[in-house]
Length: 239
Image (cartoon, rainbow, N blue to C red; front, top):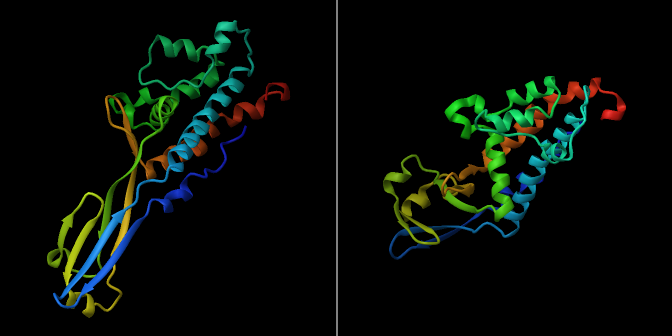
């Protein structure tokens, strides 16, 4: 059994960056700081799509191998086309038909991994979210945007003395110049950008960069290892 390789998606967090521009106006006694967020590079949605597709496909590959384990059954052509790793929000007839393509012991493990076990909270399940993103990627590029930004200055009361203005492409923060000059450390902001992926329309899904990591970890370190014992006990011809 092979787990999906370590992702190459997460190092790209450094591409979602901000630019800080500092200007000191001695005549007016103003310390002016402009903070601008950059649009996500064009390559990021493509890499994200590959990441989602590869992660979901790892479950499809293992589903095929699991269906071939003893006690092996003879499949019809129609059944062979339907073999997949099921991800369902409710336990209905369609789900029962799919689980019937696997040995009973395997089907029981698949049951344990289903989003429907969480009841109304099924949208929070990592496999449901992965499946949603996978379907979205089939039809369009997964939207990526720098949707929120957090920042702070090295001053305990900076929010009370700062004056802020929001523009379409940047944020302007002003301080009395003496505040910056009297600072014991370099008076520059610490900026962090929260990236969101997906779409919110209809039954859409929006996930953060952190959530993508959690989905990846769930598949690689939780879901797939549950099936390892089946392959350890299987004859070589079934692996």
